Image 1 (cartoon, one colour):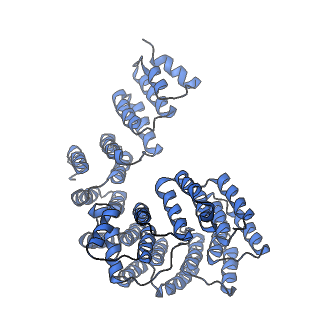
Image 2 (cartoon, rainbow, N blue to C red):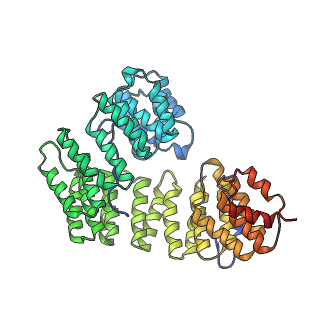
Image 3 (cartoon, rainbow, N blue to C red):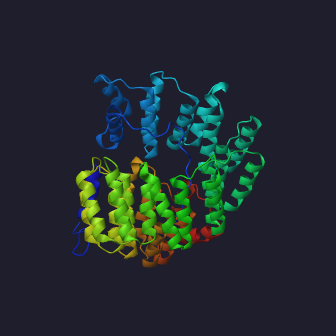
Amino acid sequence: MMINRCQRLISLTRTPSILKTFTTVTEVTEPDIISPQHKQSATEKRLYRRLSELGATGGTVAQTLNQYMREGNFVKKIELERCVRELRRYGKYQHALEVMEWMDKREINFSNTDLAVRLDLISKVHGVSEAERFFNNLSPSLQTRNTYGALLNAYCKSQMTDKAFGLFKQLESKNFTTPLSFNNIMTLYIGLNQPEKVPPLIEEMKKRKIHLSTFSYNIWMQSFSMLGDIPGVERVFEEITRDKKETCNWTTYSNLAGAYVKAGLVEKAESALKLLENETKHPSREAYHFLITFYSSLNNKEQVHRVSSLLKSSFETTSNMSYRIILQALSKISDLDGLKTWFEEWESTCSYYDTRVANVVISCYLRHNMVEEAELVFHGSVKRSSGPFVQTLVLFMKHYLASHQIDLAMKCLETASAQAEIGNWYPHSESIDVFLEYFEKEKDVAGAEKLFKILQKLKCVDDKVYSHLLQTYIAAGKTEPDMGKRIEQDGIVVTPELGNMLKKVCTV
């Protein structure tokens, strides 16, 4: 059905000229709370591969695991935990949670760490309120430092400041405070763009003799980077290198490189990137991803290609995410030939056609006004994937809006809204404003009403939308007697300005 809709879009928009079809600072992330990396067994690789490909193959986690066992395979708890870890790492939270739910139905005992992981996944898949409910339903003996910490992390990630600080106080009263608790609060401050509040927390940790983890040092370093304090960044880096209990990891070097890149200190950035690359002796896809991204920020085409090839040779398979990072880097440095080569390689080898990878190429082509090339990639996506294509259509919509092709932009919006039935999506207010202002200027009531119906379906009608709609009616000299009733049904508060416009439009 989704493919048919996209094909209708393509056919409808075919015209002679159209449709011949950093902030580079390393993001602070929560350290993984499942067991460390290990060399997977062949059996475990087969299991993880099946689970990781569910997006393409269909079916559920439960069906996959049950079939796997019916084939005579025995699955150990530690193997399932490692599958959960890998699924989490690549953002497949729904499937990771389903693995844990399958484990629960099989009455596999959960450790405190397992429960914390499950709470974290619930917050990501179902929201913080469901995570709270899960926590509250745990027996007091299971409301441990781990589960409290996972709930605090969920509050901080969602920037629920009152609840985060309240829970932090509870942790202190129960003597559950750990470096991770402070890390969560500092991460919250980073997310709130309040980096100046991080150094005082570090001083508090030192005063209370709470151990600074590598992650603590990394957040501290990032706070100085955000403040533009390079000497501060370097002081923190020197301190961690002197710390006998903690060591620099690739994230530390990534933060250092990011600070230098942001400050435009190219030579220092390149030196830090060499330190970062030395940390990839024990391969980490994420480390390579940051290397590639930073080199693109330095506009270093040669290094982008070199590290991309190194990434590819370091693993048995190159993940969709890795290809996406590589293509984003090539797009940033406008290496269109390299972009085409790597994209074609991905298309010829991928086991799951991820439309997000194709979207990177489409976006780049549209930015360079290569519309026909972008449409060819879109056609290929429609043939090989069931979608959704909402974000792809949004890319085309923005291009058409920028080039003042309103009819084509409307068709993209209309098709995207039809696909949005399967997920929550709302067009950006900036795009809506372009449509509204155009229809008002053209005195196009029919166009404005068509847009209004789409926005109403997406549940993003507000007083601003009604204001533009009313102004369009007024500019066109037309009336709508039922407009007051419509505003009331949509629950819009009638301001004095809106009331004055209503009087003009509702006049019979």
